Image 1 (cartoon, rainbow, N blue to C red):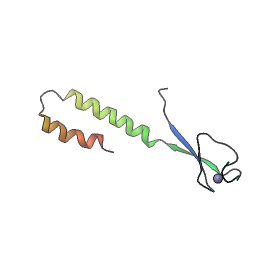
Image 2: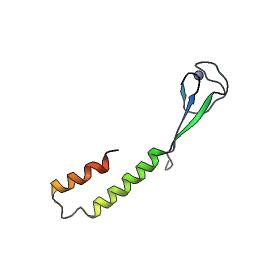
Image 3: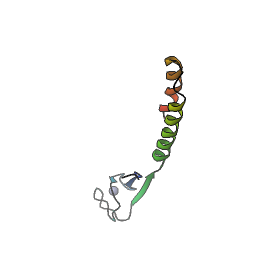
Image 4: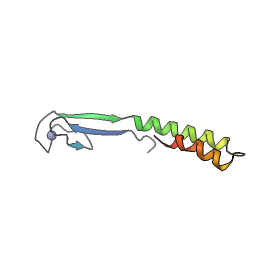
Length: 78
Ligand SMILES: [Zn+2]
């Protein structure tokens, strides 16, 4: 379960989404209109969040609460 690459399949005709690819769209009954869309951006941003969190944890010892909160906000916003 370590790999969590999000994939979605959308019909080009009606925009219906499916959890996996299929030859015919159930909504509009059109063949070969469903295309795969990979949401790779979420995995990369997740890795960046983990790196940022580890960095803040190591330099977190002698900072004031006000300074920490000012640095933490841009790291968690995306
Ligand atoms: Zn469709």
